Image 1 (cartoon, rainbow, N blue to C red):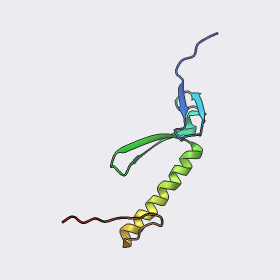
Image 2: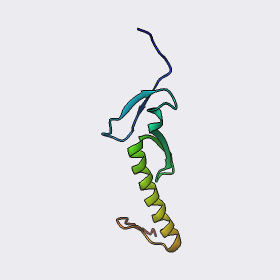
Image 3: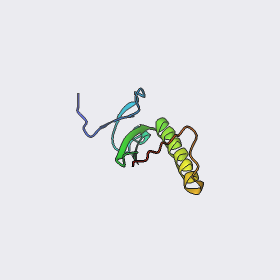
Image 4: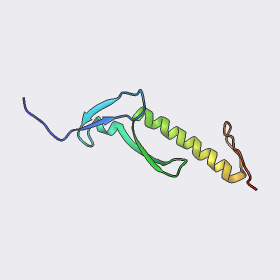
Length: 90
């Protein structure tokens, strides 16, 4: 049996997804996985690898966030389900 090197393991980082493929970079299966980066609430850059299904869901979350943020910047509107608290110190 021959050995063929140069394959990468691709797996979706979403818990419970379970999609895993082995392929060369840019191959048929490799292009089904994408890396997304974002800045979290603590201003830290984060990244994850997603299968095409979960990448589409992640992108929808980001689009909704962008719309909520645009509304906030326009008129101070808070998205439904978001609560804020203020404390004053003396």
